[in-house]
Image 1 (cartoon, rainbow, N blue to C red):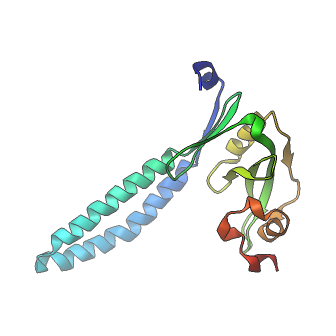
Image 2: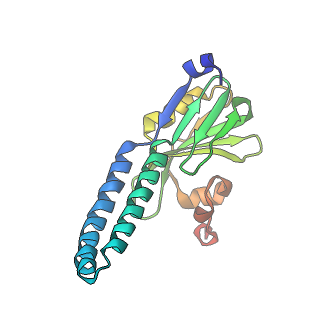
Image 3: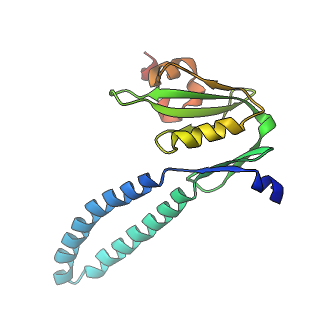
Length: 183
């Protein structure tokens, strides 16, 4: 991307609050567990095993935090770039985007509907999915507004996961495509 393309880019990032909530949960579980393990291991002379486990846990948390904080979606005048949680980024020419669907998805269990956006190519393959659990509604809408080369469909009615499984299973991840869900 050139310098002028970067200046005209829209960049959105994931909700930071989820990172802090996850860190709080890990601390609430890990601190009492580690204290108990130290209390039992130090008199037996095995405290260094607990220390090694604690260091590994802290390194894993650091890597997870950095990867999560680095997640972003960028739209320039010519391309769509995603940096997911797992290593590697993906970029698509905006000309390859055939359509985008923005909808309210309700999962089973009576949860509140969450905004989701699916960006598809001309063969119906999923290029990008932005889940409202991770992305703010404003972030989803700002990316949708920048997809000027493709129609953006805003579905008015809330869609359940079962309905989406029956109508567009290719837009779902492998674990959401369970065959028993469509019965």
